[in-house]
Image 1 (cartoon, rainbow, N blue to C red):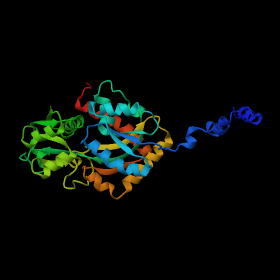
Image 2 (cartoon, rainbow, N blue to C red):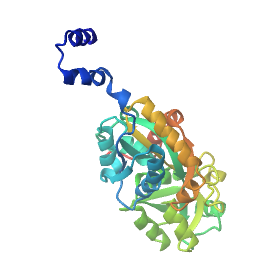
Image 3 (cartoon, one colour):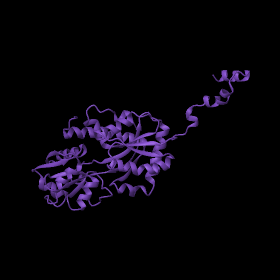
Image 4 (cartoon, helix red, strand yellow):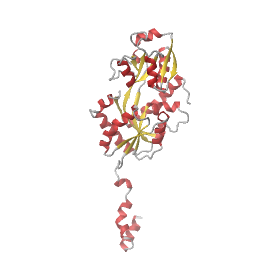
Length: 327
């Protein structure tokens, strides 16, 4: 086609407007359009005010600055995160739609939601992990035993109940029962707040609480926190021992990351991952995360991809241990 255009131009038979336009016609679009060339949507798959939503709003400002385009948070709540995740999986893979990706949506839902409309490993391109926090094991203020070791000894052989308001808390209760040899019966609640409230008044014996709510109730004296679920000491609660100090091998956390539709170009993923690197390195970022009960945990695109694959398998084992049926 190039030769034909040149021949017609020399004969004078090519319209002037096409002669002037022909260089643009012969260049691929990518050659004159640098990504990002328009605003970016960051989908938070939970309601406004949720932890995922608040984190999305914290990272949107530095990402806007680093990428040179507005990063606009869009809440697509429903189905415990499934609605928003599906929307991103089906979005154009041009780097303008991103997902706040967390352990529940990415690693737990594939084993607990029937006919899940996305596949974590097939439908998303990992960009990177940015933060984590533990769950906290809490008991009523007047529970027996002064600390984790004392409580485990005091309740051994007794029939206990544990409250849960989400699948993660339910799974961790089942893990504790199996790994510590406790007789624990799960009691479902509509949400984590209600579960925590009933622990505080002694209606149930324990609960794995979300970190922010659990630590606030503990420090306010309304519950007693015994341990955290991560195997390492969490920097925002150094007074709490990891459960693994008394229950060897116990290790579970809540992690949060960013992902894109699966076919997003590698060059775009690389640029986004680099922006996350710069954001996490900024000394102002850690304190912002701490306000949500989160600590920075950076994994780049390649490392996060391998981690994600292992997490889907690991939480599948935990779901089966807990006896949870998809439905």
